[in-house]
Length: 168
Image (tube, rainbow, N blue to C red; front, top):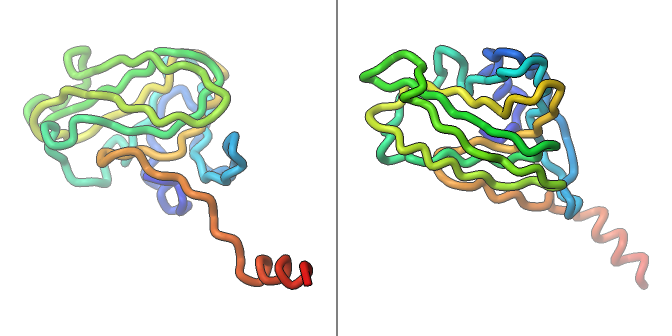
């Protein structure tokens, strides 16, 4: 999920202790590059959201082949994040099928890599973006294939030509 298309929000409607995820927000990173993000605000002390919904919109995947979740994120406060998952063998969320990670606050976006060590076919997962109430989290992407490279949007040819023309 890269949040470049508003249609992706349909997959992020199942959540707990979060404001509704209803818009994609355009923000700039420290280098001035524009990013489309899912901005979520915690309303309680146990927030979580299901990528793909509580009944996933995606096919189960091999936990051995895709053992890492990559998330591009900007957070205001250091917190403990958690990822819970269900497998083809065990369809219930439990402490046994959960991993915790410390996420440090930084003024800009960071690429997180959560080594999940999950097994079997993964049928669903949910992300807990910390435990701090009233915290804003900006998610740039969630990927199972690797970090998503963010590039600056190319300039329009007409704008570039107009600047060059002004030099003469």
